[in-house]
Image (tube, rainbow, N blue to C red; front, side):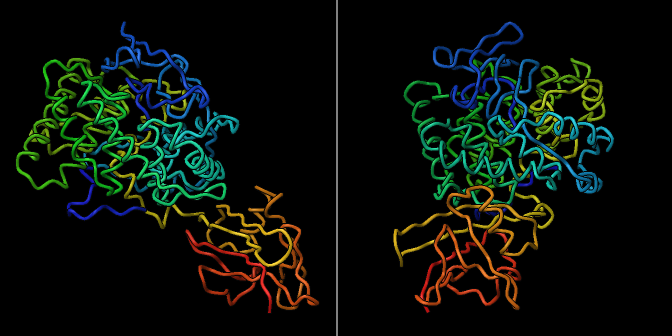
Length: 478
């Protein structure tokens, strides 16, 4: 499972879960139902007054976007899994030779399913974990993806921290979605540009104040997401993280060190300068050997039980940086097996490692396998008669669905905008009205369907859209 970032210096193909420590800034505002106080092992993080990360902390009321995996976490999100999950997991392998038994993975997946609550904010960390575990054949996953797209459009620019935006980018990459073009609610946002802007602000704060706006955990997520998306702007934060890791004054949590290690591993594969390579190598060697030392002293435990998921991901993905030393993954996994994980966020943290994956693979999932469903963008436009209108929506439908299914999903989601009527003909169903505007032979008007600028040559009952296609229904004359 070693370094899945591309080796070339071309950007990786475009199309965090959270740790529990020092990531309050990732959790966001109260509107996102995110908690405030962070506690654990006698430490307390106060984000604004004391932004230096502490070790092995855990928010007590983090019910929001990216809450950590700790006993007080109340985050419950919709995650349902089909039989395809186990089929996907059956082929999982890991370079270090440790993969959890299928029955344990199945149990954890079903616990996530049982924790479903669709009235909670969508958690990108859970979607990311599901995708890495191959649990893609469920309506709940589609719901999460749709809600994440909506939240990105509504809140990414003004109401999210850099770490939250980074998690959204990772979740979308792992869903084979392009984070540069997130469609929802009739709008499109470029999450990578937003993430780059927020990361630049974090770095400016580090230069002037000596601390980031949020936390080093957030900056680690930022660097990882930017690197995997091939967006640029990740080298500066990666160099800063490497120096922080190597600083004798730093007291950085297991979670932050683990995510930083993943980010530095990706960055290492893209740098040419020998000085940068040496710095990154030293930092990665230091972090991973510290983890191995902690595991030996703790009889398999690294930090605490809620730090283990991210630590296992990091060790599984970075073996060349602690070679020739070997990782006793069996000992570490046995610690995880003994714990009865019940909290959704705890499961979301540890699940990728248990199936031999890490967040480094977020941008390298098998999109053919993951796309049991596809996303189709659909617009209805009238600039011809009466009151003009133009509405756009993104819907998920099973792969192989007809355009009629797309129209039905759109109408179900927003009936006040996308309601429609059909008439049955010898050629199949024909759309005769959309948004209350009916075609008329007297006026020689009809609803024309286009893909891009090209008129469709098939009807709505037979045409099958492809992933990411933009279908337009335009009120026209003949």
